[in-house]
Length: 205
Image 1 (cartoon, rainbow, N blue to C red):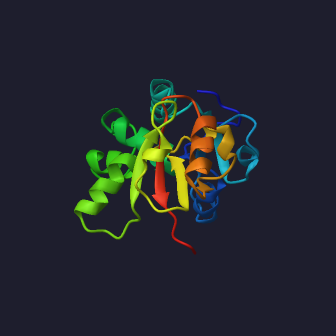
Image 2 (cartoon, rainbow, N blue to C red; image 1 turned 135 degrees about the horizontal axis):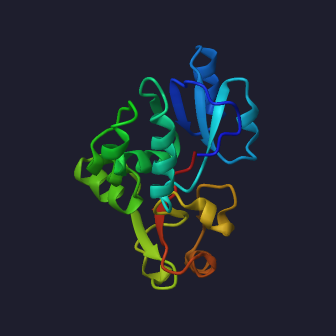
């Protein structure tokens, strides 16, 4: 645990951003923020202490140790808030250990795994007759976009929320391709090889 401000008893531990910290702080809830040391949010008047963030998906053991070490020093269990797919998946997969130190609410583990993985979500949605666009998935470096049986234009996005690892996407969550050649060019550029991407029929508006 890296304390960059004087630690106090925090009633909320936030794996997220100011979007969560601000409303909690405005309601009088003291917050410990899990973030990078250079994150300006750490200087918010609503943040009482900072816990250094590690990748919740790739380094869950490190983050779990930091969180449980912090919570064990509190007089009462803090409430754990999570933001985004990474925080949600982390909390779900480590719920048993975290529940000894934190209070939190989570849906069933299998449901979380489905809704955060687009290759699993779309077949599941079809089984429930939910109105979702026609969707197929391809793996970079292995599959050919010419095999897609979809109507262009298409939206392309990573199967899991790993946009930060795909430089071609920049800050975007998805990209638009207008024809098979466009799709092939994009998939050839995307990486790392072996990452799965979802191709989905575009619905204007």
